[in-house]
Every structure is written in structure tokens, then in C-alpha cells.
Length: 286
Image 1 (cartoon, rainbow, N blue to C red):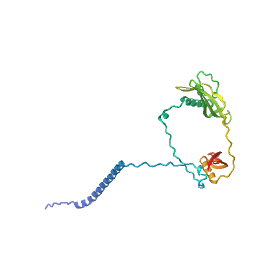
Image 2 (image 1 turned 180 degrees about the horizontal axis):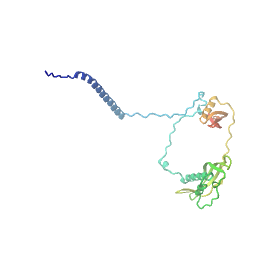
Image 3 (image 1 turned 45 degrees about the vertical axis):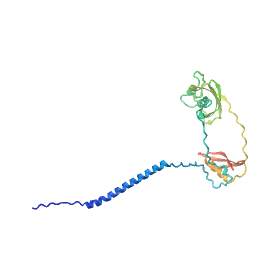
């Protein structure tokens, strides 16, 4: 039997035809990467040689949408945006202490003490905080905090006068208002009252030196009378008043208008979130 050798031939031409497209794609990818790198390098060099100036930022001003405003009558009452330079302070101003640092400490301690002293609720500790604020050997009478009588809450307390009492002591006058209720009654708002509190200030803080001293509230000056209502303001003034009042509440209603030297004084009522209508006033310049 004759032996026949069979040799298989590889179709190199067909394989090369299939490989060449892949090589073309790879070559295109290399060129694209090189082009991107050149663009990035050019941008970095350009940024190093040229830096654009920062953009100018314009602060937006308040906007009031009123279509019926005339040109010249009411525009003076509209808010305008102005640029004000910030005040410059010297290093000495920034490093300077208040003229009397002890006054601030005394005021804080006096307001704090008044709030605790005239608050009587069902706190289990009773008057312990009040007694701890006073001298340890002080003979303090019975306080409402130790009983089960009426309830009192200090709504606010503000110091409005302070005087030096010598030897690191200050006499602070504090006005305050409390909400109170009898044992079986509703809360009422008590009238504003004032007391003087003697406070001693030292390196370790402040302490109350005596019980509150009753004093009268200062009487303010007699205010000038309001302008008499009268006249019919322009519709632009009415629209502007309603727009300004709507920022505070809802459903503004004009009650009266008074012509003043600079324009108009408008009195109107505005409803709050629970439906109460509060009278408010404003001046609109013309």
C-alpha cells in the first residue's frame, strides 16, 4: 500500500485580511490619544501664560412686582441696591477690650437671676437655684417656689441701666414681664415691672449680693401726635403698601391714609397665621 503524505495549507491571505482592519482601528486609537494629549498640554501652557480677570458679581436687589407704578411719583419709595464699603478697623481697635468688661458679666448675671427668682413652677428643687445664687449665710425668707400656690413664668428680662457700686460691685436695673396663673385659673400677662440687682464681679465670675430691690420704670417722652387721616392716595401707593404688607402677613386691608410732608402714611391690618388681624403702619415716600 502506497503511503501518501497530506500537507494542510494555512490560508495566510485570508487571515491577514481579517487582522488588518484591527490594526487600522488600533492605529486610529493611538492617534486620537496623542491628539488629546497635545490639546491638554497646550491648554496648560496657555493657562500658565495668561490668567483671565475674575468676573464681576452683581448683588441682586429686592424686586417688587407693581405694574401700575408711575415714573416719578412713587419710585422714591422703592428700595434700591447700593454698594457700601465695609468699615476698616485698625489692629488696636480689634485687640481693644470693652471699657469695663465687668459690666457685661454683671448684666448677664442680673438677667439670669431675675428670670429664676420670679419663676415659680412645680420644679422639684424648689428655690434651690435661687438660694444658691445668694450668699451662703443669707437669711432668705420663704419663696413661692417652695409652695404650691400660683404659677409664674418670666417671659423676658432685660437690663436697661447699670451703675458702679464700688469694690467690683454693680447695681443693675432689670425690667421683666411674667405670665402667671392662680392655683385653679388661667394664665394672664402681668404688667412690666423693674427691680435692681446688686451683683459682685470677680476673677471667677459673678454672684448676686442681695435680694431684688423694687424700682419704678422710667417714664418716656410724650410722643408726637399722629397725622390726621385724610386724602386719597394714588393707586400706585395703595399697591405698594399692599405689596410691602404681604411680606409680613396675608390679606392686607387699608384702614386710613394720611398725607405727610414726604409722601403718605398708611395704616392697614394684616392677618397672621391664626387669623388675627394686626394694625400696622408704613410710610411711602413720593
